[in-house]
Image (cartoon, rainbow, N blue to C red):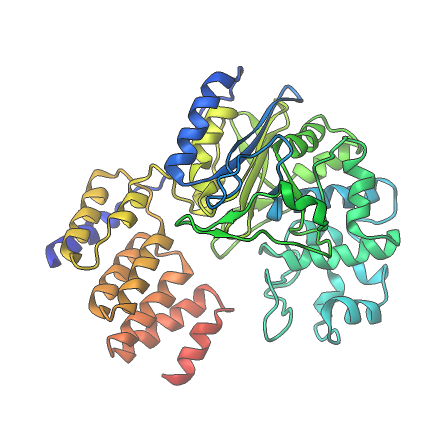
Length: 477
């Protein structure tokens, strides 16, 4: 076993970084091929249903729903079947905000506390008194570019700012929630009605909804876990600009086409949306840039914008190339949806997809996925040999989450020494990921090495000062 670990150590030090599929944009869409290939990809990735919309030259040229709504009922999808959009709600929310900027109802760089009283903000958003003066600096631009300093979710301490607003980027649905409160107060109406006014009605999007109605139930696709079990879809009785949209590829494709045609807003506002406004300096999104409501990067086809959606068991993705007026959107009712994203992007729109390096999403045909399935707890040496073979052949972009899960599964089986070796391998491959330090700390603690455990928990805190688990463990060491 030791010889495999030594080989892994050597080769991991020189492991080259994965380059996402890069190619020219597709000039012609082969729908006959897609009708064959997409079900094959879905089957390989374990995705029961998928909804796709493709835009070329500013037009929605093809959209289709594939598969079944539920693995239990086997009911086939229909053209009007609905999928949870998750965070693909955010670009639509951002468009509504930009409409209000367009109309002069809100300015991107005016602190939001000037629009709504602090008393209202405290009562309806924070739920406590403003205790950090930096909060009063937050603007709409910061909320849309994820540079507020807010965490992505509330914790015991409320919404502490991790950094001075506008000095870094940290993805935060709470920033969207804060801005939603402001625009709803300014418009004196809910976000779902604003979306109806600015997006759904003008674009004839009859299959898009922000709040639950019982009439939607027959059309909803059930969400599924990575192993195929069926879970219920969410029923949201309150609209949230971060995640409550249900829609499909055809409807969202209409919105995406409208954006690529730069309709509805002044041209300078689209330029603002697609201009890098913030760039992450630390964390798992380090080096990622965000515009206003969408991620942005430069490609061979010019500026590209994108966003992903993830509710755990429902996932989605959209992207566009404004210069070419080309783009694609898709929704899946499975935790595995994005594991087929790169291949689907290659066969529908083409182009470069650099952001997948940051999102760390292994694809269904990546050997590391097969390795996870291959893992046998009774044959650890064989597992390490297989892993070593992949490293030597450089066949795979390793996914730290899969190795991390294998390590924790080993600890659940009281195989603490083996778990430690897996976490060491993960550390060598992913020295910049904060979670590998935390995992190593836990593994050393399980192996009664408190000195090493304390060392790695301290390093975990250096990587992520908000790591509450590391803080709690250090109190006991």
